[in-house]
Amino acid sequence: MVFRRFGEELNAFIGKPVSVTTGEGKEYSGLLLGVDESLNLVLDKVTGAGENVFKVAVNGSNVREIKLTAKPYDFRALGERLNRVFPGLVSVREDIGVIMVMDKIKVTDKGVEGSGLAVDKAKAIYDEYMREIKK
Image 1 (tube, one colour):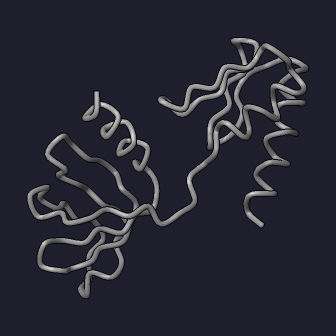
Image 2 (tube, helix red, strand yellow; image 1 turned 30 degrees about the horizontal axis):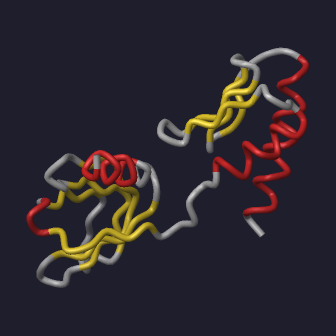
Image 3 (cartoon, rainbow, N blue to C red; image 1 turned 45 degrees about the vertical axis):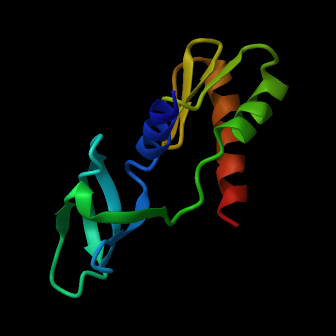
């Protein structure tokens, strides 16, 4: 159970900017593309490596720490806002990064997908939320 929760939390870092420190004290910053159960990592758009590097794979046995460098997306807060407009019709699935509205509108940190009149209202709530968190 503990490892499963750790894995879920670490998977939430995928696609987000991170800073990785190795056992030798070397630091890499970039987008986390992938991670496995041994903490082997792949970073894209790497900076701070002190060399001309675009992607890097780091051996998990050499990882000392991984820091998320961007504020995490708060699915619960957005879900609560959506639930005020669509009471009882909102399902927040943080484990997979999705909020479902009326089982047909999909809201992720990338935007709103679906069709129908309710999509416009969900998109307006999403857009307002995104403007607020970027302030």
